[in-house]
Amino acid sequence: MATSSGAPGAPGGAAGTKLGPKTGSKSATKATALPAGGPSGGAGSEDGGGGGMLGWSDDLATGDINIDSQHWYIVKLINEIREAHVRVRDRAALIVLFEKLLGFLRLHFRYEEKLLKRLHYEGLKVLATDHASLLTQAEAVLAYARAERVIESRFVTMLLYGLLSHIRSEADLRPLISAARRNEAAG
Image 1: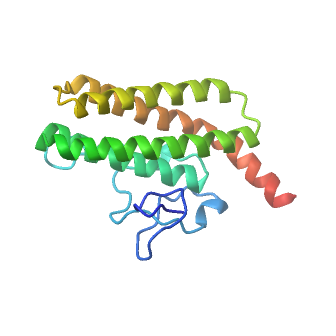
Image 2: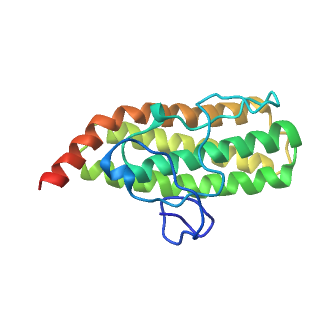
């Protein structure tokens, strides 16, 4: 599913957009609209410009097409933020991107927590705390940008790599999600 802004995971997707990451599970074969440009490269592939653009790789997949598509979109936003901050140094673009990221993270974290609650995930409380921490970090960086303060690269880097680490750790949910999909198919 996609939002009207092209983000996956919410109603209103546009026709003609590319499909998200393939996770290898039967549920992942459903078409989910993603922004044009689609996933590419491995996590940590270079873009040729020295910026170390991050890409989607199957080792980031959880097995849930919605979570995986949302994670892919977060990786896409991370790359756009890094581009605006490191290369272009465009404060206005950075503010817009952080607003987009923050809004999307709120939607994504709600979806993820709701799904994992339904699956009786034992680590949900810790995950929700991690989500709250990431949102607080994103809000702080956005506040700095809006106040026209200098945004130190280390703050942006800590947030973006915190998000990437979060996505990587959620690949550990693959067995739980796979078991739930098998149970849904059998039941």
